[in-house]
Every structure is written in structure tokens, then in C-alpha cells.
Image 1 (cartoon, rainbow, N blue to C red):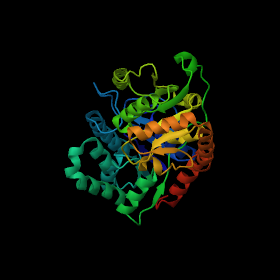
Image 2: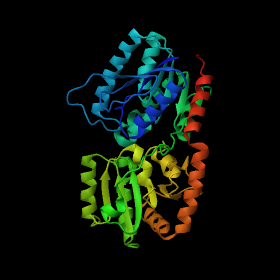
Image 3: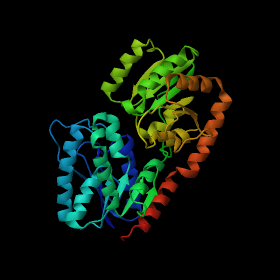
Length: 384
């Protein structure tokens, strides 16, 4: 099939959704489809076999587009839709594969041009917006209605996690819905020369967080609980990888206010192909997320590293994690602090969780599993 894959994101960047989009486009190309990927103007140029990349126009003053709703993203969405229509007018697409809010573009396109679409559901947009802007709860029903219409009019829905699959099935019980989780990114990791212990002067336990520093990730909880844990175990150190310059500066200042600057280290962004190299240097991996219902992509790589995972006991984690493969705590400072201490002082527990986690990810969240699930979904679509 000739597929228009619409991903309203900067592309390519080494973070969540762009990484998932690259994997999706690459897999569809490997399956023999002619894929046209439409993305924002911002991002690094890459080449993917059987995939043609299209970008919307470069917009003056629009750069550094962050995840989630923003004025910049809405402006880019508008121009992306214009580009989408122009591509449709000059190509004969068999299917639109719409990621996140691009599904609303696909709804309009289907009505005008009669092109069916797949809804790639990476988040519940109504919940995401209300988490970020609580005042929008007054129009929650309207937003949910729009999402339900998007599901109902689609040829099928690909949900990135159990929670989103449940939402899609609730919206439309008879719709073709499949779960296509993210996968570990450690399959092709390179070797680096950044030895954290030597460079940072660390001699004790390394707890590591990898990801952006947005509020929903629970970075405040992470730093405050680590500060509490350090009063009980002085061998603890926290290494934070990721984040933009402004967010790093903000949390560096927060660490200094708490007197933690000698034990909390901000390393900035690192290439995804070195993710395994850095995870292997950690003793504990942390995911303190406090909002959202989709599972963080990093969780699958965390599990594959064979290192113990400390995470909040919330649906964002528990739809993948359980007590056999992770140390789960309620999103409270004292509970997460206790998790840091228990894992730091119990090497047997760390080893057991790591071994169990690696086994689980190989069985359920590997590249072969991803390809198998995506192929099965496309074969079931009511269009060929």
C-alpha cells in the first residue's frame, strides 16, 4: 500500500515519540509498503529505506518544540495539515496512518477525499490536556467526544499500552483495536568513553534517571525523595541524563537549594545509540512519573538492561511492571526514598529484579515482537 504516515512531531530527535515514529516507518517500509512520512520542519535529517520524508514549511521563530500541547505545536499542526492536503492532491494514497492529534486531520481528509485511516493512539489527549491545564475540565466531555469520533471513523486503532487499548474499546467495542507497545532500544547500542564514575568522581551507588525533565515525569519527586534517602545512606548518587538547557538549569538550582549539588549530576542529552552504555553504569534505574496513562518508552530499555527499576505504582507503569520485575512505590517522597535505600543496600534484590526484567522484555517487548504485532494488525485491516 501507499501510506501517508502523519506524525506531528519534530523529526528526527532522540526522544519518545520521534523514536517510535522512526521504528514504525522503518517497519512499514520493511513490510513492502511505500511510506510517505509527514513531520514538522524541525529535526535531524535521516534516511529510512522505502520511506520518503516530507516536512512542513520552516516557520520563523518556531523552534525547540517540546512534547505536549503548546502554541508552537498548534501553529505547526496548522501548517502540517496544509502540507497534508497538498500531498494528497498530488499522490494516490491507500491509507493514512495518523499519530496522536494527526487523527483529527485524518478525519477531515477521510470526509473530503475518502481515504481511510488508522489511528495511532499514543496518548489520551483529553486526559493529557487536563493534566497540564486543569481549567480545561469544563470541556472534557467535548474533547472525549472528539476522540470517540476519531476512533469510530477509523479503520483500526493501534494503542501503545493497555490503558489506551481499554479506552479505544470503550469508545467503539466492535472496532479493530490492537496493542503495539514500545520496545527496548538496546539492540544496537554502541560503546562510549564517558566513564561516569571517573569523570564525576563517584564511588558509591549510582541511581540513574533518563528522559526529559517535564513536570509530569515527577522530577521534583525524584530529587526530593533522593535527598531524603541520602540522609539515611550517604553512598547514594543520582545521575540525570536528558533535558533541555532551561530545565537542567532549573533543577540544578533546586538541587543547590537542597544542598545536593555534590550528589546529583546533570549530564544533559546523550545519543540514543549509547543508551545501553550509560544504563550499564547504573546500579538503580528510576522512573518517578506522576501523570499520564501511557508507559514511558524508557521502561522497556530499563528492563532490558538487567538493572533494577524503581518506579511509581501508577497505571503508567503497572500495566507493564509488577513486583517480580520492579520495585514499585506510591508517588510519595518517603516511599520512594525507602525504595532507594532498600535497593542500594540489598544486592540480591537488585540482581533478582534485573534478571527477571530482562527475561520479560525479551519475551514481550523486543523488535521481533513489535514487527509481528504490526504485521498482524495490518493484515486485519478492512482495506488492502
